[in-house]
Length: 156
Image (cartoon, rainbow, N blue to C red):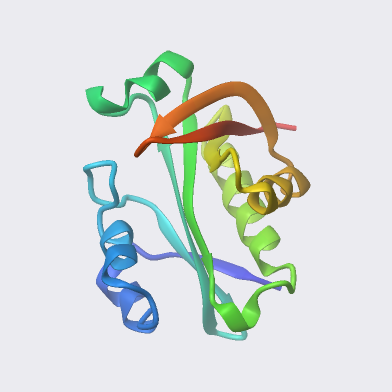
């Protein structure tokens, strides 16, 4: 069973993520949303870190992210991003456990829903998130010139 523990110190997290590129580490330490990470969790199996997820509860994002503001105006919602499972632990169901635990915790903490974006052409990730419990909306977003589909995980 995966155990998620919140880790606010991204440098501590990055110490074990030494196989990743500098670009990935930059995303983990502040991301491209222009703010420091306020909620990230490390996933553990038998006290050994095997993955990471960033999930935050938001009301509004900065003006340059107004697509999100228009979509969820007035709602308390959570954004799920940057799921990572170390390669040797993939295809064992741990990613599913990580995402479900994080989403359920966000909803328990007051979010009405959890949202994420998946590249339209990333069929493997779209299937993964569908199997976790996300539903694709009919909304798309363009990020860095690429089309993404918005998916949502709702309260049961």
